[in-house]
Length: 195
Image 1 (spheres, helix red, strand yellow):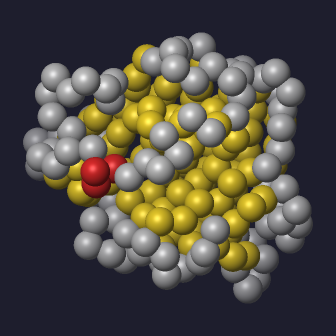
Image 2 (cartoon, helix red, strand yellow):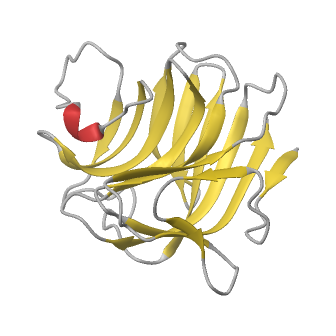
């Protein structure tokens, strides 16, 4: 069931960090890449709905040395689930990831390594990768973050990029988008569905 669909002409439900604004033609939400780390937070509460899907049609335009962008769900004071693209997680290089972490999440500080003490799921991008188009391009893609029970799954254009299981955050929390390292993105569509 559809819980929310963005109307970029009415931003009352959003709390926008530095650099987020509506495109001049009113058809998209844009992050202009002027800030090193910024969020667009949907401030609506969906009651006790803990299992939901966030869909966003996003074009990654670029900017910064290690561009990062993605979606978050079940975010609360103690943390939440972040899923997206990053080129700074050492030593993996370019990855798609799902990670539970605190509100001060910074993928660059994770220095993920096999056997790390916190749960993280990644899908490393390299020249041998055939599961999906591994080049971050400037086309629009539909990203889908599913948080159902203890399952967290990130899709792009209907294909699973990465999945994880974690039981830390079981409250509805907040939902939104983020961009980091001066990354520029355009968001054409944003919806939330209950599962």
